[in-house]
Image 1 (cartoon, rainbow, N blue to C red):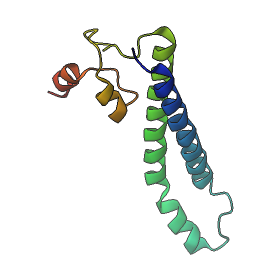
Image 2 (image 1 turned 45 degrees about the vertical axis):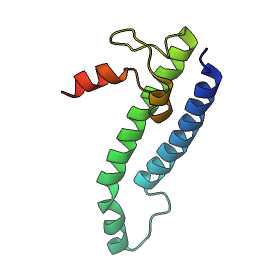
Image 3 (image 1 turned 120 degrees about the vertical axis):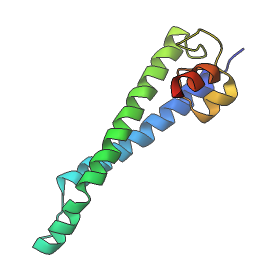
Length: 110
């Protein structure tokens, strides 16, 4: 028997953390409270590219978490989307939003 509530709660916590991170990144990119000094503004804007990459990665992770939550609702969370085999609980502990068993994940990396 799988503990879907455990993983659902874990995914919801990850989602909450990501939403906070995304909001903080958005605030930083918008430069709310930006310094009036032009040199300081230039330094602050240098970080925009890195922040944008972090924001994009966070958005991608958020999409994977939302998809995992849907798979929990449909009863497909513990099944590999590629071969239908059971995803080991230890793998889901490490990557709670994974869609592949170890074997299929290794195949896709090669």
